[in-house]
Length: 281
Image 1 (cartoon, rainbow, N blue to C red):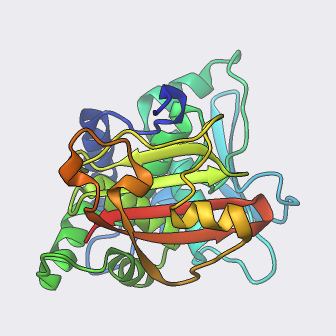
Image 2 (tube, rainbow, N blue to C red; image 1 turned 180 degrees about the vertical axis):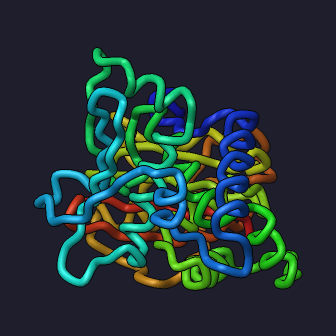
């Protein structure tokens, strides 16, 4: 079964509104074919920013002091304004600055300010909205749909397609995966599991299944690729594997049991976490 606290989907209406808002700023300040650079938009909006090594306590932080906003961005090593993680973090903070409800909340002295990370797994809805805004800003819908239209493939290898998107738009695979999901170009589900338990999931509107076949305490299905990793350390690094609908989902039609699905895993070993991208082959 699926518990509501793990369902990280926003409403379709809200996602569309964020996408339209992001597209406006992208097209106004970084028109195609130029890549979208958040610092150009911040400078146009007169939002000051600082890059520094903040010890990893946050990836981005939007501060309000007496109505004056300032964005702080964590950089390390060779990071700069053009690095994928920094660009996403900057776009995320721009979301907080641009989205009326977020900015107005920060203007309220009683609202506690907090840093954000580029992990895409915050249980705060405002953080998920800023994530979606960031993904839409860096990958505007019209530009992305044109690229996908050129592929003209009925059943593509989704992992390979997302890799191409991430390289072209200079963003991480996980950010491209989130954007691809919300574009509803092809039905996919993302399942994030940690310590062998479901952490969160998101899915396209037309993905055919919803209810995960979980064990006690939200344990990840044993026969999934993610389940194998937690069971014995098996990794399918950079590989797309075939699984079956019955391996992942509670089914109501017996004919669905052997429907073939594809699973592509991103392993975050330091967190004992796996992100599974699932689609129908």
